[in-house]
Image 1: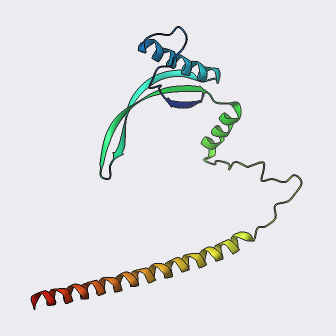
Image 2 (image 1 turned 30 degrees about the vertical axis):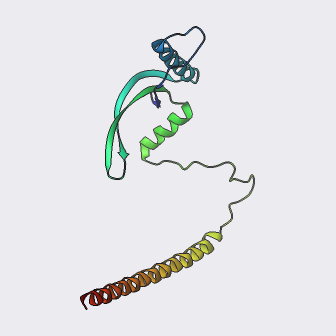
Image 3 (image 1 turned 120 degrees about the horizontal axis):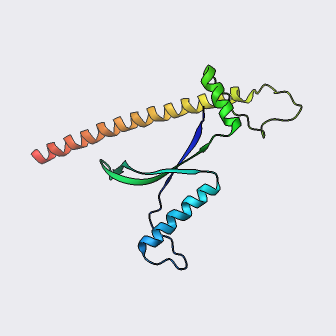
Length: 160
């Protein structure tokens, strides 16, 4: 089964100036041509252009729908990537990528005790944050009570 990688990029919004290219349409066509050729040089095959809705926030509470023009490209997956994908499909297992910088040649992996220490310090930090939050809540309740007392006192003075 043939498998592909897909790439979706925004279509150019403006034309590109070039020698001998005059007019807005010609500049825009030149921008499209340049983008298509750049991706084709990387092995991407142009499939289609799409205009899709994109819902975006506007202000604090409203949203607006904008339409975006996108270019869709594809290329054949590499043999290595296709083999890994086939293994994933066969048994549902996906291997974790290994960072070569983390491995030391000829060295066994040593157990790392640092995470236990990090967890303990993290727990202490969380406890401290919880104490601070409780203290802040108590202070805000006390402040609310004091404001209510002052307001009551002010109302009784106005009544006199």
